[in-house]
Image (cartoon, rainbow, N blue to C red; front, side):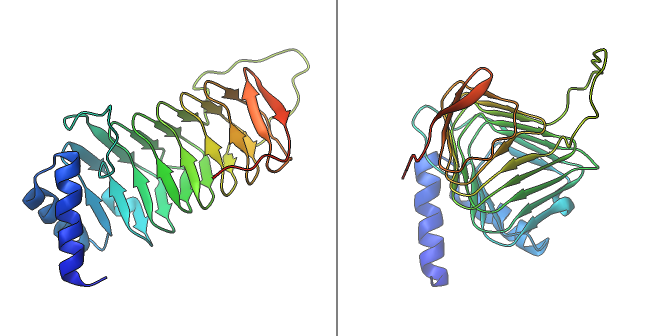
Length: 216
């Protein structure tokens, strides 16, 4: 895409999400100086910019969603490391808190508005994933709860395969694994390691409801 077409597309995107074009352009140029490929709308705050690696284009708050307000705030607090390996989009109102010992890897896809990531250990999200609004990804309890005869704890890291669709208001907790091609039903609470690809997962706690599902 030529430079002129990129500028025209940015102008159209800004109109759609009601962000001042010159502000978005100035931010883009600032990020480029910092060697980050980021386009952001207004009301976006980033702490720890140096800890962000963009191998594709990262768009923050630049995709139109009808129920969002142009004043909704998006906040990224990156004390650890976050890597976007392909083009990725983060919706307005999202919160990302990546702890100093954590690494978050996003292969490609998008996250819709008002979704929260609290990652103190690590998370990987594969290619072509669609994450709906109002979701929570949390890999830490922040309190110590013990049971008699408790088994050795496994990894807290969250692993999401490629081409996974996470429905709205889903909570995904520490140690969860969701294989390629799966769909997580709205409102589910995932706290298990699944090993069946292309499955419909749902409920609280989540379980496999159907297998051999296909989504587009």
